Image (cartoon, rainbow, N blue to C red; front, side, top):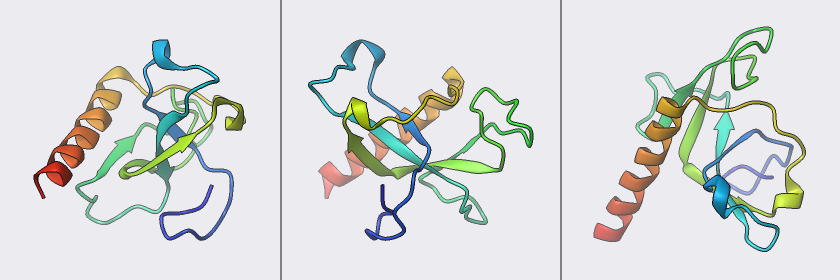
Length: 109
């Protein structure tokens, strides 16, 4: 995938936000991009993700990273290369809330 400016194509980690019971080959998955390009301070649309230098965090991430909740992507199930880990429930809830807030704001404008 490419970055939000349509540049820098590469394999990127994602947080799939599509509910498990809604995943099928017929419908695209909705996901949030994960990036290691951190804002300082952290941006309002970012959620920090667990990481461990040896990949021992539940996410499988090895460096500080965030879910960039304004960077939503759609992809087909067969475009998924591999599952590396999972997002803890409380972090996933924060991500989903940021997406909902973003949607509410865009509908109000």
